[in-house]
Length: 203
Picture 1: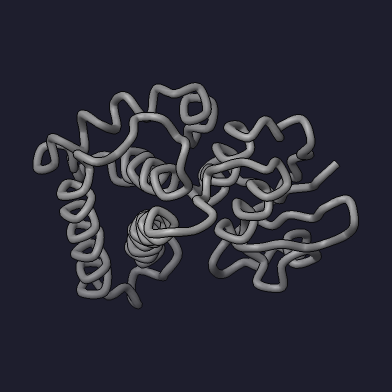
Picture 2: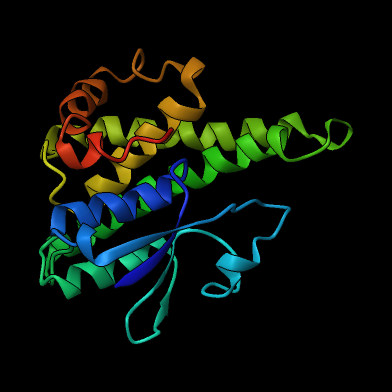
């Protein structure tokens, strides 16, 4: 069995879990409890990932893999799946969309950490605002591209974007991103209802 350090609130862990679900690998993964935190280091995770960040995967051969991009590519190769196109322009489109989704998550996490992990007297609202501008720009680009998206989680780029939007719903519910991005909202309503997405929503 593979072992995965897991947190149900992590969009990156969700990306791995959606990938595993779509590839039929869930029964081959044991989930390990963890408490990843930007300040308080969890040495359990560090036994696999020296950065002590989730997701972190250990294979049956004691191969340790991190971060989500590497783990998802490993799972896809293991299952001989097609979530990452092997070659051609479609591969670069998929990887660029994954970078867009991951970048949105990165910026949202940094904005959240500014107020949830940093002491009040050291908080810098301008920093958080700058991160949220990145979130807004990413949403704008998704809205521009979304007419070409499939509504199934059959591509790692779309999985990353779907998990990013789900993270905004979870941690930034007051943002109401759907109002300014109606095409994305319509796409996500269908995409997020897929069993792989529904089973992995953060809680």
